[in-house]
Amino acid sequence: MVGVSISTVSRALHRPEMVDAETRERINVAASALGYVPQGVGRALVSRRTRSVGAVVPRIGASAFAQTIEALRHGLGKSNYTLLLAQPPIKEQADLRPLRTLIERGVDGIVLLGNDCPPAWLDLIAKNGLPVATIWADAGNALPGSIGFDNYAAGRQAAEHLLSLGHREFAFISGYLALNQRARQRYQGLLETIAAGGGRLSRELIIEADYGFANGYQATRRLLSRKLPFSALICGNDYLALGAMAGLREEGLRIPGDISVMGFNDSEFAAFVDPPLTTIRFPSIEIGAAAAETLLAAIESQEPMPPPQMLPTALVRRRSTGPAPVSE
Image 1 (tube, helix red, strand yellow):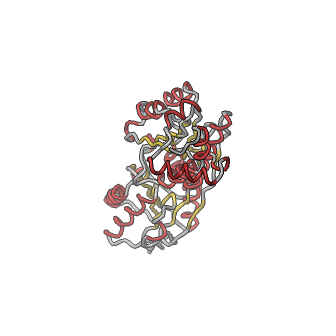
Image 2 (cartoon, rainbow, N blue to C red):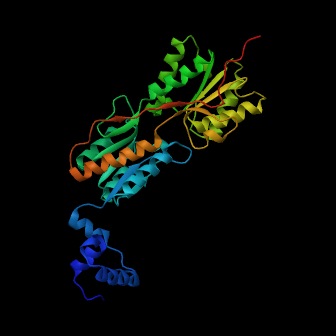
């Protein structure tokens, strides 16, 4: 249609600086008129790359992972890589099929969530010679290529803040500890710091639940029904905390006058609820950006994945926490 060679068309579309402006413009007009899109399958056969990365993340909706995935997608997109996402149900995390499907699609690298992945997953990835980055990894036993933070330290930060306000009686709404290493480490940091500071977190005041608004509300109702005293309620994420605040208000309890409430992650809504939520900020966006950079570098260099990167967390103090109420 334009009267030039295939190689000139290829250069105009992919290395436009190598083609003069007039020819490049004629080629672009023709491509637009024909609705031409380069065939990725053919390019992949030549380059042995699909310029795609597969991620296995069980949950995005009511979770802190959405910001990480968006930052990952953005980082990959800057280098013209596409993110393919597999979302197996939480109770089917050991199922190999989602991972196998991504590998069948010819992805150039894999992103996994957490460093407690099933050994069969890691074995399948290794046998296919793919680099793997692990996001939201915990500092304990993190694999090469992992990007995350120290959940134990995050739990300690939360407990230290509330202890400094005079709280000694605690309640905790957590994710399912048996299924989540991050939740277990956070719980351990809380428990040991509270005990060392002269506080108490009894087993009767710990409830495990899914990380959702309704789950936080329901768990709080259960806590209050047990008629055990606590002045500080720590929630495993901000979604649980917001639901918990609704449950406390329904019972006529003031926040923080009667009970202080604290979450984890510093979600976008945390500063805009009433009262604004005190929380531990997790580096959600930074994890996604670092994962994209780390994985792309490994794909391009074909070198082994670098040592784990553990990013800092921070206390964000707002008005949902205050001094412990004085006993009459």
